[in-house]
Length: 352
Image (tube, rainbow, N blue to C red; front, side, top):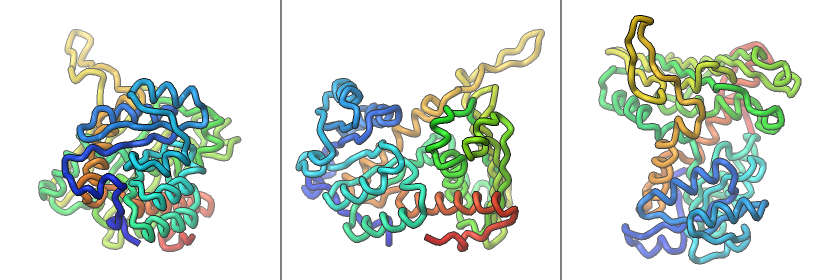
């Protein structure tokens, strides 16, 4: 199984680097609208079709971007569609990936591929067998500040990576109905941080130790989930990543990373509504933090679609593939087991 295996969509076979990649959006909800805007703003991309179980939602997105409303089957059979962006509910992701891989389309899928490790592995076998292009939506790798942090590591500015600290706290919990179907904090929220940790450590984690509590809202606990979590990842060489999550940060959307190396450290701080500091008799103050992931990561969403377009158009390996989606879910499962059993869990214990 390899993420580099790919079969371009039908028009990609023309072999032109200046081709326009024609997209269909599957799922016209909140994240579907974000990706539709990103496609519209990306050179060499156009939105041709939108599908959604709610016709009005599909029609609104299609009208905003000059696209058509089509059904999933019609999109799979269409000769004018090169790629699809899957923004449907999680329990449909794996089946849709397989369908469009077999149809010869390039596939971008929001995380996670599925909530079950075995189902993800089966899906990725289909991707490998068809040679389809698959990219998974871990948008934080494309945030300008986080990319600059990674470049500092790659350029040797801090020496060999030793420790990574990731803080990720939401301003407030999502609705309880969402909590019940999300797969839980580790599969839904921390999964982004697991991907970032793998990306920054430079080595695969070997063990996972996690602690989780319900400190924000008792209803979250009654729904079978946690709202506060800490995870320690350790690689075979001893490198460590510490992830701190909370569903409540009264001061805004808290997103910070620090990487300590043998020669120094590199940090990426929070984004404020304005990059100013006011000094007066009362002291030093700054504007509040951005308070929503869609405003904090606007540039990241645009950059990841641009990277996917480049992969489809030029045939390069995608920067975040199916294996990355699988490994982030494996780490989430290990964290869940660690909490349930009160012990450190080896990653290779997670089957499927």
